[in-house]
Image 1 (cartoon, rainbow, N blue to C red):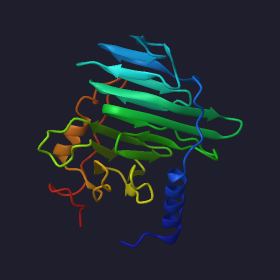
Image 2 (cartoon, rainbow, N blue to C red):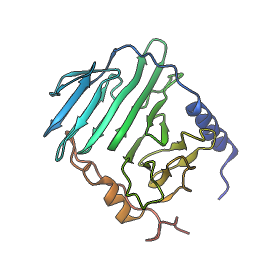
Image 3 (cartoon, rainbow, N blue to C red):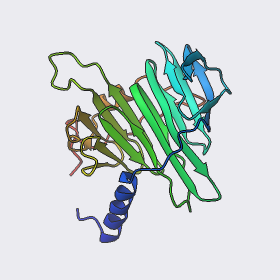
Image 4 (cartoon, helix red, strand yellow):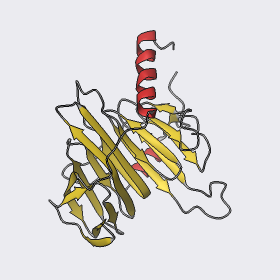
Length: 243
């Protein structure tokens, strides 16, 4: 199916915009608040680690850790949300939200584990980039929902020894690119997934199977105030789009 020129131009412009490096302050400014926590959740700030409690403020450069059997839901200052599965570590590397200048720039670093993001749509904003980076890849979004997983410790006999990043798009579209090759992104639309193994380019995007959806959503289906609903599988059992 041929993509209309108008839509193709819009997607190309969005990809170019997401690839541009955002300007994010390094100062410890307010970025979010802890919303719903279960089990053991801690925050590391200025080299000190302490328990995180619901309602606690979170600042740029804060690192959040969830223990075994634990989870956390974080609400950012623009009302975007981040849900962390058990055994996950993230850093709020940068966050800017300025309504008067119509700017939102988010940068989250996923050190290991798995997280679901619901990026707030901000109509009329000139800059609304939201990025999630791992050791091998970066996922970019403007206004949608997606999941990123990063497995840092691969078995020694695996090809992917430098970490494996997995991205699943749940709504609208996201881009995924290798940190080694930022100019060669992959575009993912709903129910599509891709992976970046080490310094390699993203694998060709494809529709996730029902089994893959269940695996990626595991641990994220009941975090926060509402249940995460799994998207309907698209395509046949081998992950190809329907004819």
